[in-house]
Image (cartoon, rainbow, N blue to C red; front, side):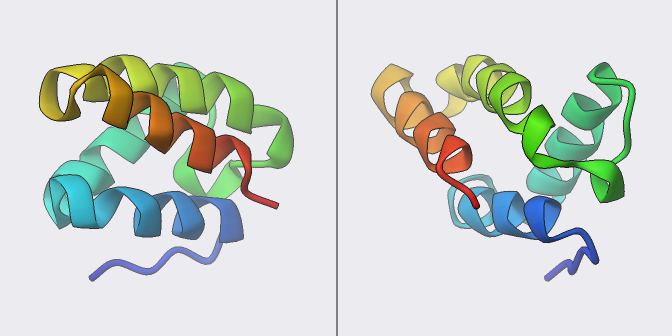
Length: 79
């Protein structure tokens, strides 16, 4: 199990890992953060809306539309 020093990255990891596993979660989080021009340890509240939307889009193929939307909603509610 991975651990991030960034609280937002850690919380997103904890939401995703039971659904898509450790390796897929780490890769997804890294690539989606990179699309925003940041790394996982730089995620801030301002990034959550865009990150949630990108993750939702990518997760539809794995989880289906409703589950992907629920995951995005959980990410948006992180405080």
